[in-house]
Image (cartoon, rainbow over all chains, first blue to last red; front, top):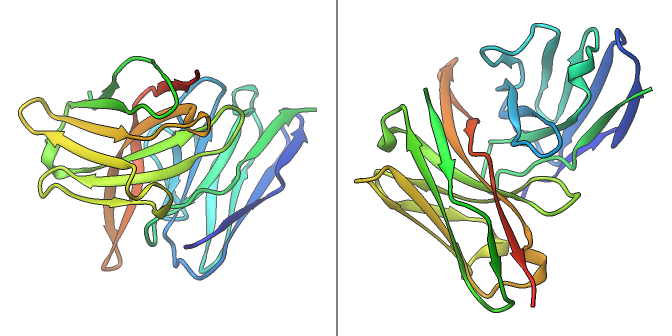
Amino acid sequence: DIQMTQSPSSLSASVGDRVTITCRASQSISSYLNWYQQKPGKAPNLLIYSASGLQSGVPSRFSGSGSGSYFTLTISSLQPEDFATYYCQQSYSTPYSFGQGTKLEIK
Amino acid sequence: QVQLVQSGAEVKKPGASVKVSCKASGYTFSTYYIHWVRQAPGQGLEWMAIINPSAVTTTYAQKFQGRVTMTRDTSTSTVYMELSSLTSDDTAVYYCARDAFMVRGGRTYYYMDVWGKGTTVTVSS
């Protein structure tokens, strides 16, 4: 099974900050990497697919990059509604594993 | 619009089974696979299984093999997930999600683009 590891596990930042979250796979997964945002009590919401594709309706301040086993999610200028938990997920092979999550909190 | 509507919360005793439904609308049911993902209280997301509604093929995470069964009813565009031999560790919110795909550079990429709101399953004696 492929293990996904995110860092950091939690992060404090201010509105307007630029933030980067990293995700590493235990083996190469090409670009089969997705990012989701989850707010408390809500279902996850797709942000980025295939490592760098911006899902329709997602603000352009979100971007993804990487391939192989190293990936990043960047938020260029944090907005109040961005404080949430973020998960990466590989779709290279089943079981389609998630990272443990990165909780983004207000500083 | 595309929607996945899940059944309501369940409370079960240890050893029992639970069956959660996920009704799709707004798209051709047989075209997209459906995932099940769960989230224990205060924990992260855990992938459980995937079903191809048209071919009724399923893939389950090893952890749930023998305890989980996914089925579908094409007449109502509904997918079901049944989990048996419940323990307190199965207390979680269970989500269904549609498996969307796109083709780029000769490869097909998969991602979960639409999610149900979740079904809370509580296992308690």
